[in-house]
Image 1 (cartoon, rainbow, N blue to C red):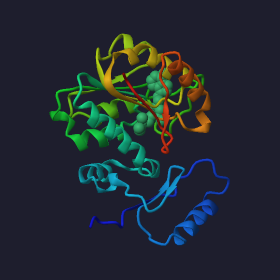
Image 2 (image 1 turned 180 degrees about the vertical axis):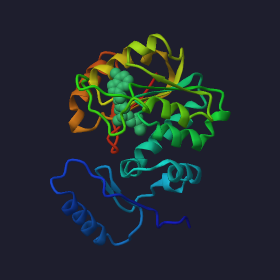
Image 3 (image 1 turned 135 degrees about the vertical axis):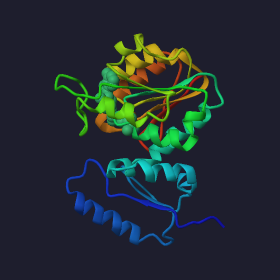
Image 4 (image 1 turned 90 degrees about the vertical axis):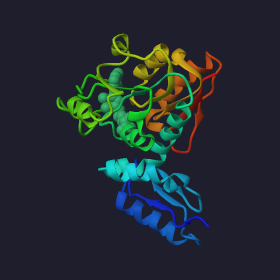
Length: 252
Ligand SMILES: C[S@@+](CC[C@H](N)C(=O)[O-])C[C@H]1O[C@@H](n2cnc3c(N)ncnc32)[C@H](O)[C@@H]1O
């Protein structure tokens, strides 16, 4: 029998008025679960008695343990496992991989280590502004800075097929972008930027390639979901909202 003690517990929940009280409430719920197995708490998710198959994926969990440094990164590993699934699917297809909005590169790093990406005959194109100014429509991230671009380039120094580009989407796509795409992740918390990325890149996705929209299911980014729903509806697509808060589209 598989090891069924798999649990993944984090105190990272967004949008609560009293985080300590909320955590106590979650713990109270956990205490009331008959079989204390398959519990995932964090990232606004609470499940129990689930397989949580990604916790049994040894290379993935090794990469998680090696690269996760913050509570947010730990809380979101279910989301990260969805990206890994998209990448594994893309390995069988023609084309390269894209992440619009890579920030520190943590989720890509975890995925790339899991699949030993340096040995894969594909490139992974990462884009970010890396720095923030208050006129921008998206929010700042804690480690945005003048140094972040270099630190992400350095982070992938052992994977020459990971191409890190600093710039604003969509403008930067005129300089650097793959012709064919086997997997794409958009995570910019920025509706105009995400729609502009779709305008340029969606038609380059090959049939069967997966698109993951990180912010799609979150009320805080509802404007982004509405903009993307209209964009996809006009092209005969529907976005699947996942329990992780991500949106999923399969390119035809
Ligand atoms: C939530 S973070 C990305 C997190 C990352 N995908 C991960 O998994 O760790 C969002 C990032 O999108 C970037 N961003 C927002 N608008 C952008 C644009 N127009 N062009 C490029 N990057 C953008 C921000 O600089 C920010 O670092």
